[in-house]
Length: 126
Image: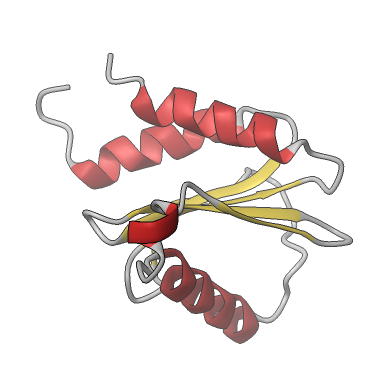
């Protein structure tokens, strides 16, 4: 992919994920908890109406996902998942670049299937 910036490439990958029926949000978050690529599925109303709480959550996920204290004994984090009443949240850290992919999906979603789809899309370097 010559000429593609990392942000543009990440936007394209997030857009691919948003084509999955169960995915509501796919975004790349930087080490400061800021959204740098992706977002919500078009026309979707987010569950979280308070921007401050959403920003705090993004910062929390970012901080937890880039932790490395158990990497030597247990291996690095592949993904973190939380099943809530209204959504499944899954984060995938990219430790080298200190960014992470955050996915929000329907509560009935299969977390392992979501993880496989993410790996498929983000390792496909056509």
